[in-house]
Image 1 (cartoon, rainbow, N blue to C red):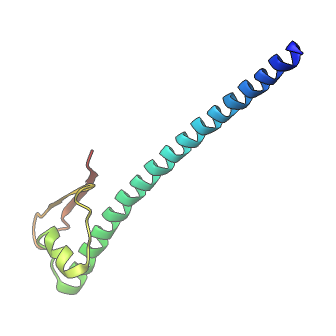
Image 2: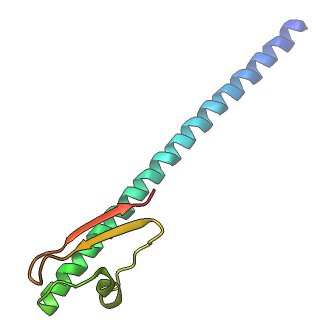
Length: 104
């Protein structure tokens, strides 16, 4: 009788250990997925700004003077709580230096 009870406890203990390991790996997978999504959002925003800048140059003959100009005229949307965009102009006919970083 005593042997059956201790064997049942061992089964339950092993089950909880397996569940704990499964939950741990599930949480790690979710963290990796979130990190990948954040990196993809950053990449898409950078790409969108560069495409809008080139479109502006192709249609108007000059690069946009500010990032605000791109927002108003080319539909760029920036989540300013998550991202910071540095947009530096060197001249009307020179591609601006565009840097997008994620806020911590």
